[in-house]
Length: 75
Image (cartoon, rainbow, N blue to C red):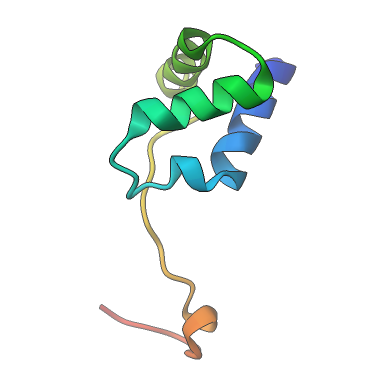
């Protein structure tokens, strides 16, 4: 993992463009690539490498109960 991987992860976490419910993944990768001034395929390949290495397992949606005024929520 190098500084570009770290910057990509940072953008994935901070950017609304990579929301787990975003259906336009290509646009998301494109926006990350544009912001980091690298090629879109570079971003895609780096993310795939992070998945293969086990560092990045996937995305999921979680609700923070504190944000909706609850202490604990069961589903």
